[in-house]
Structure formats: structure tokens, C-alpha cells
Image (cartoon, rainbow, N blue to C red):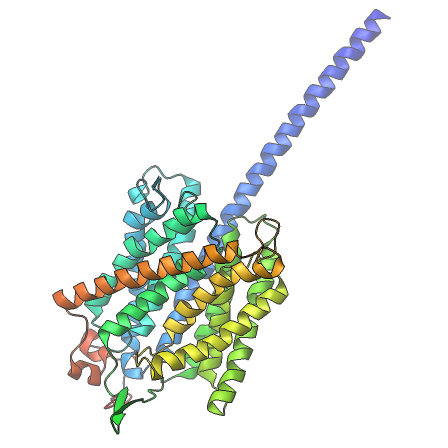
Length: 442
């Protein structure tokens, strides 16, 4: 009898041990699979966001004149190429290094000590830095010296974007600790680019022939882009890439909120396009294609901050509001402030980025964060507003200082002759449409 008990006891012990070993092995396997899925998801999302550079290039090229097409393409190419080197050397460390009082990072320069997960994270973040930099290209199009633009682009990716990004996306950033929520970058990426674009457009001045006086009153003249189909292609590319932008910001391929994020992104963009079409139809008596396209972008920018915390209905309201705002903002900046923004970058990214960030304080509806309309009170709304204003002061202020410095040293604007001839010839010695007559006196 004792022998049987001993045998049963040993057998049970072996079974428990074997079960524990098997369970541990299963857990380790699942963890490895999860890490592998995260790696694939983030690199794939990074590729989608990288493809947005092509979208920006097409939008800006289509909405400007043919004689400047090569210049637009070169600026977009260098935004990423030079910006990636700057973000590798300095930008990543300032944004995600060990925080100094919540304002900037202090280590990991040149990705020192990086492992596979850090390489993955850097790859996902560098494409966001390039997006912030390239937003400015459109607002300063058709009259900026290429060499000056290169200087600006490096500064944005190395310093300006990473510092404000540290405040929000570094877990020890001062705005992050305050509870500020910007899931995928309405403020971190888009408003930063938009406010720097505003500073650049102001200091650069308008394109020749953009404004004229009638009876002592300044009037705005439309300078049409040369290729609306190209602009439309760019918007569809951007919309496609935005699924990597927003859904990729889960930072995990196993996060079940990916589906919701894709839905809110789609609904907001759609609502923005419809709202802009209707607004332009009322305003101009015709449904304007360029405004409708910018409306889709406005909806995308607007939902980027709250895509993971808004309901589908909330995302539609955010997109509708952004679609109306972008039309009104473009008209106000052009015809009241007389600031020349050829593609509406300040309105689509700066203004609608600010709106989308503030909207989190209104429409957020999760267990962790509640907006005003869902019983959360004014606390989150106040935090979101503080973040928006803080980033505006930083980005617009440092942008002014940067462009003033460039203007006083190497110069910011091309000569009048180069502007009339086209920057393709004056700055690059080549034409985008060889064999075609594209010269104009505007």
C-alpha cells in the first residue's frame, strides 16, 4: 500500500512539474510570437507612413505651378533624407532619452546602446519626424531658397520637433505627466509643422503677383495649381498611409483597438471631405475640388489625437468640424491676414491639428479618459488646451527665430528673376516637364 502511495505521489509530482514546464514553454513561445508580431506591425506601419512622403510631394506639386515641380520634389526628398540623419544623431535622443525635468532627453545620441526593439521604435518614429518637417514645404513653396530650406529641415528634425515631442510622448515629459492626450500626433506632428509653416510664410512674404491693391484695399489673386489629378492622387496616398500613422501608434500588433482606430480615421476623413465640399459649395457657389481634398486631410489631422478614444459618432463630428474649419481658415489667412500659403498647410495641419487635440477633451469616451460631453468635466479639456497653446508658443516662436536667423545669414528667398523663371531652372538647372512651355509672368 505504501509503495502504491509513493508511486502515485511521484507520478503526480512528475505531472505537475511537466505541466509547469509546458506552461512556461507555451508562455515563452507566445511572448516571442507577440514580440515578432509587434516588430512586423511597427515596421509595416512605418513603411505606410514613409509612403506619405510621396503623398505630400504629389499634393504640393499639383497645387503649385509646373515651373516649380522639381523644387517641390527635391524638398520632400531631402525632408526625409537629411531629416533621418539628423533624427538618428540628435533628434531621437532629445525626444526619447532620459528626461531632464520633463523638457528634453539626455542620452541615446546616435542610438548608442540600441537593441532590436529600439531600432524598431526609431524606424517608426523617424517617419513621423519627416512628416512634421515636410508640412512646411507647401506653405513656403515657389519662393524659398533650396539651401535655406535644407537648413530649416535639419533643425526641425534634430531639435524643434523632438523637444515638444518629448513633452508629450516621452513618459516623463511634463505634458505627459499632466495627462495631455495626443495619441498619434495632431499636435505633436501636425500642429508643430503647421505653426512653423505659419512663421515661415509670414517672414518669407507672398509670391509675386499674389496680392494687389484696388482703391487702396489689398485683394488676393488666386494662383491655380497646375495638376489637380496629381493633387488628388497625393491625398489618396496620404489617406492610405494614415492607417499606418494612426493604427500603427498602438505600437503593438496585438492591440485590439486597431479596428476602432481604423474606423474612426475613415469616418473623420470622410466627414471632413463632405463638410468641405458643402462649405465650399455655399461659399463659392461651386463645390471646389482643392477645398474638398483639403477637407479630407483636415478630417485626418483632426482625428489623429483622439482616434483611439473617440466613438465613431464622435469622430464624424470631429471630421465635420475640421472640414468646415479648413475652408474658413484658408479664406481668413489668405484674404484677411494676407499670408500666402499655396497649399493651405497652416489651415489643414496647424488649425485642424489644434482643433483635433482640443476635441479629445470633448469627445473622449474610454474608462481612462472622459471628455466633457461624456461626463468628464472640464479637466481634460483644460489640459488639452494648455498643451495646444504651449506647443503653439514653442513651434511658432522658435520658427520665427530660425527663419529670421536664416534670412539674416544665407538669405531665405530667391531673387525676383528666379521666382518668375521658376525654381526648377534657377535652383536646380532642370525642368520637370522638359519640352513643354511652362514659363509664366506670375
